[in-house]
Image 1 (cartoon, rainbow, N blue to C red):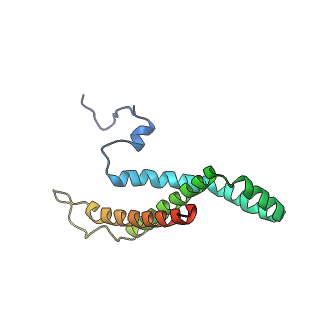
Image 2 (tube, one colour; image 1 turned 30 degrees about the vertical axis):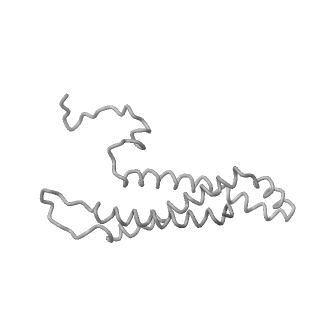
Image 3 (cartoon, one colour; image 1 turned 180 degrees about the horizontal axis):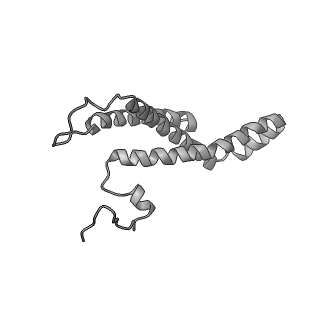
Amino acid sequence: MQLNDTQKLPNKLGLWGWLGGGRYGIERYAYSLHRLTGIALILYLPFHLYITSVRLQGEAAWENLMARFDTPLMHVLEYLLFGAFLFHGFNGLRLFFTELGFFIGKPALPEPPYRTSVHHQRPVFIGAMLLAGAFFVIGAIDFFGF
């Protein structure tokens, strides 16, 4: 089947085509996870503001609310939120410095075989994720008291 520039194949994969494509590098998955963690952090913000505003109602209201949230499930969800914050923060810093021109290599003429900046950016991504992982483990020690 031959396609011209105006014809496109239908997307039969749906959301799995965006998340699980299978032929993408780690950068594509980092992009998807960066978006998902950003959405999660934005959705958490009003919840956090509400919980924090309960402090204005007095010590009894605050203690009552905190007692309701003192469950193992909430501790795990809080730790996952911490992990989302770490990933989004460290990946955001990596993207910030990449947009400023760091980690992209020297400019070159576009002559085949084309050189990409993957060899410059992937080690920085792996380093940022190792750093986030180290903080994630340190957080586990603090959260769960290992």
